[in-house]
Amino acid sequence: MLNLIRELWFLKRDIVSDDFDRALYRLAEEVPMTIHEYPTGEPCWTWRVPEKWACHEAYLETLDGRRLLDYADHPLHAVSYSLPFEGVVSREELLRHLHVHPRQPDAIPFVFKYYERDWGLCASQNLRESLNDESYRVVIRSSFEPGTLKVGEVVVPGQSEETFVIVAHLCHPAMVNDDLSGVVVALDVARVLGGHSGRPQPGGHVGRPQHYTYRFLILPETIGSVAYLSHHEGMVPKMVGGLFLEMLGNDSPHALQGSFQPGSQPDRCFNTALRHLDPQGYSGAYRTIIDNDERQFNAPGVRVPMLSLSRVQAPKASGLPPYPEYHSSLDTPEIVTQERLEASRDVVLGLLQAW
Ligand SMILES: [Zn+2]
Image (tube, rainbow, N blue to C red; front, side, top):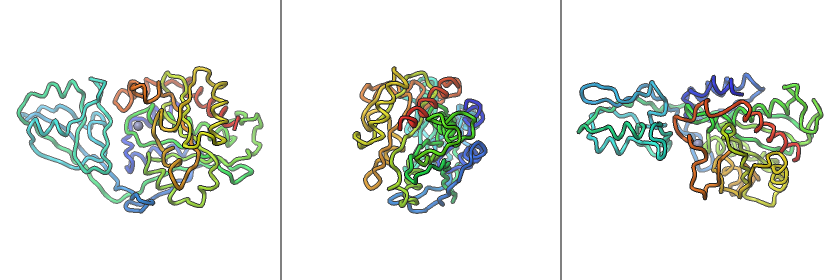
C-alpha cells in the first residue's frame, strides 16, 4: 500500500484530468477493474460532467522577473480548475486571487474551483506576507477541453445480488492521507475478499464465495458518485449498505460516521463491531465527523445506508481540522505508515466479517 502511495501521490489528479486517468489505470493493474467513462457535458441527474482540465504552466513573478512560485515545483500552486490568466496585476488584485492555508504558515493550500470559473494561485502564508511590491506578473496557462470522467469499479461477486458498496476518491492532487490512503486500503480489502491475496477471507474461508456481492468504486469526489449512481439507477435498490474510506494513514484512532439511517443494519452492526476492533475508536452521527461521497449515497432518492471510516482526530464540532496537514502540501507520504494502513484494512475486514 505504501509503495503504491509513493508511486502515485505526486500526480496531478484533478477530477477530470490525464493524471487522474494515469493513477486509475495504474491501480487497475493491481486488481481486476472495470473503468466506466462519462463524457464532458453528460447529464448526471441535475449535474453535468465537467471539462478535462490541464495546467501547462503557472507562476508568479516580480516585474523584474524574479519567480516567486511555480506550478512546476508543486501542483497545489495553481487552483484546481483555474481559468487561464496572464497579465500584470496590482498587489491588491493579486491578493484576491492568491490563496493561503488557514493554519499552516509554510504550506501550500489545496484550493479547487470546479464550477466557479475564476483564476487563482496558492502560496504559503509566509510568501504572501513578503509581497510588498505595487504590482506583479501572473501567468496561468490552463486549458479546458472535452474529456471523460472515469470511475473504477472492482466487483467481488457473492451468492446474492445484494451489494455492499465501498467507495474512495482519488481526485486530490499531490496529497496522500486525503485521499490516496482510502484508495489503497479499499483495493487491499478487495484483494483479500476476492481471494487474490492468499489471506483468509472474513470468516476464515479461503476462496469460499461470500453471501453479499462487494462493489468497490474509485472515483473523483462527489461528481464521480453522482455520475456512477445516475447511470446505475437499477442497481441502487440492491445496495444494502456501504462504507466510504479515507484518511486512514495518520496517527489517530478510527472514527466511524453513521449513515443517514442510524437504525439501519450496517449502522448497528458496524457500531457494535468497532468497539472490539479499535477500542480507542469513536463513532458519530451522519455528517458530524467528515463529509465525502457518502452524502450522494445517503441522498434523497438513493438512500443507501453508507457509513464512513477515517482517522479524523475529533468530530467537526471540536473545531479541529481532520488532521493537522489536511488539504495542504504537508499531506505527504511521510505522515502515513504501512502499519497504520494495514491496521485500517484489518478494521474494514473486521467490520465486513461482522456484517
Ligand atoms: Zn479532501
